Length: 366
Ligand code: GDP
Image 1 (cartoon, helix red, strand yellow):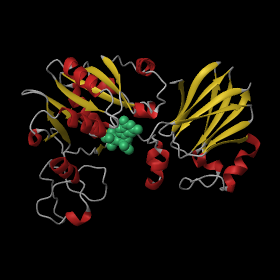
Image 2 (tube, helix red, strand yellow; image 1 turned 120 degrees about the horizontal axis):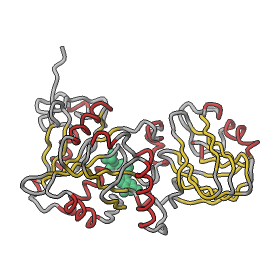
Image 3 (tube, rainbow, N blue to C red; image 1 turned 180 degrees about the vertical axis):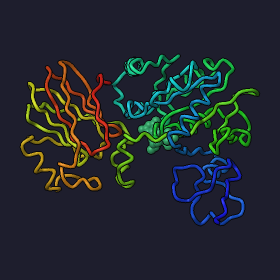
Image 4 (tube, rainbow, N blue to C red; image 1 turned 180 degrees about the horizontal axis):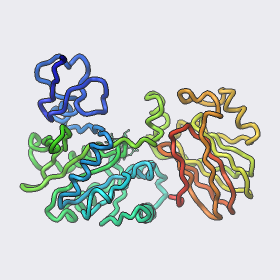
């Protein structure tokens, strides 16, 4: 029988097949006697936190554990993929604890949009989910934005209690915590972070002392199955995940016209008066307009796109979503990829995307 080895830092069972799961080490390191998993190794040597993922059940256990504490929950969401970054049923699990919301990746939205506007928008979206946060702070972990306000808010809302930072994978939680650590590492470096085990499992929380009695805990994330990023080759991910401000491209569309967002999908304007469509996607994606009557053939010819998705060699393999537009402004969101702001007098649109990808309509963010 193969011997089970455990990381001497966090106790996770050592494995070398999934880099994003707990206990990962590269294959050539599994033979060592004392093994530190990659996450603990990074933490110990570089003070760099690497996020791990959990199964759904483990994640819900973890939230229930938080629900049993009297603590402040810092809930990180992604402004670029708001719905995709929501934790389903969060409130049911975390009980009556205060929630401070950090709306991250502000740098991806146009600079011209006022922070207040984003904050109000986030509050309205949260209200629909039944979440009434003690505060909402717009931030960008990558650009160290509003770090002072966040630090002050955490310190004041926690009221001497522990703090748990939660979020789905890819919201930018580890980038943010690393930024926070760099800014406010007032304690001696080697005491800064310790790894503590989640009771009853091999899951670990990262513990950062706030004072002599309380801690900030970073918690592992959960993969959101609907994010586009889970269905795309890693080498293409860099192209589609926007790294800098999204590029708005505006079109005045007549009915029976279509906009392709590269080979990833398209939106057809089925019926309605002339309307404004502004696309917000990664700068690397080719966005273009065509007649809906030509659109299927265009996709199936394969020539026009800078890249294609695995197995999506014909437009018929895509899933479609139909939406009725009310007069005014709204966003059609393609989870993890981008969104289209439509201003119209009302009408109908159809969106084609690979299966598993969710598409939704929401109040316009910009
Ligand atoms: P985690 O899974 O929640 O810990 O997320 P990471 O911190 O690993 O970040 C996930 C991805 O989002 C990485 O590609 C980061 O570079 C990116 N990211 C994190 N924070 C920001 C941010 O504030 N702005 C932008 N544009 N990207 C970010």
